[in-house]
Image (cartoon, rainbow, N blue to C red):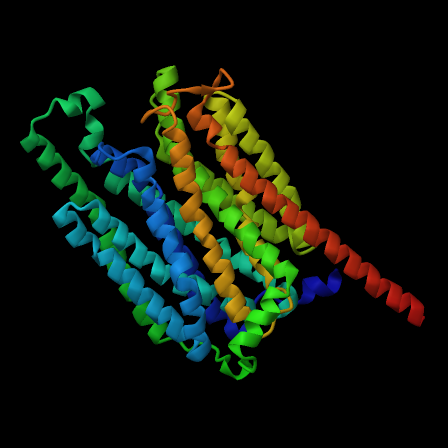
Length: 453
């Protein structure tokens, strides 16, 4: 344990590169959580959308990861990490700027395409940045280093939520009317409100696109470590080795379920709060609770990263998974504020899951880590599929959030969080199975040493 503490988390020669790449972690956090509230926002601006249709915002956004992750891995394998980052930032900026014509034409599909292009860029950034962070130091501290870099992702997420609340949600006019009053407006009034609101939605994305271009210039001027000399294994050999690695395959599955849980908890907290307001006559602001969840997520990430100095990452993943399952159960079974607090607290336990699964799944990999990274980024498609399923649960009894009650007392919006509970259970099992495996390997080493002595 003492030797582990003496190893620097980041090699001295790569400190500046680590800082620059860590900025990218915050940058895609902004995009992720600027987009999360858009599910409920588009539903308000375009009331003709069902909950399932509105959830296509997340489907379009996260499907880009699945579509582009493998091409991104092959691209950086042929060229370099830096080339992958540059192309990713270009796609990111392009998708953000596409929000301007999408707002002009008032076309929901155009918005979905814009989000998809953004995440094609993010797929390049994540496929590149995650393994690059693992490379910037000793392999013994790789998971801890990735958790440290990922700890800045929630900072970007909080920034995205604040932008969504004060630049979009607070400014749109559609939210000023009750459903009945909105339906009573004339066609000209409705057209004016929609034009105004869609223009407001586009503004933060266009601003984000400009900021991304600034970061792009900095990246171009930054020297990145070259790793092309490691590319000794053919692509077919890499795939063959990956498919034979159970730890990796199970890691991809766990990652898909984790991302699904995260996106569902952060997306449908808005509907959860809306239902509480309607049921109990309150005026809670969902974004503030989502920001609280982000703060807890950030706190949990820092705590988890600190614990990994002395505690097996798989064990931490297992314990945090159990905590997440318990909180998810609370969000389902408890009513009012108690259920909302349980929902918010899930974020504490989700905090270390993505980078920890990533680090465990890619542990001890060589060249195949680049292709392996693509599989773990493709697993983010869980964030595209799961919210649509949850949206369909909300549509069981109609467009409301408590049209029917399961088992006589659980509103459909509460019951829909059975999906995150299942997802977090899968992650918990992955933590348990890899912890059990790591203990058995340690025992084997001890037995070999004892036999030699």
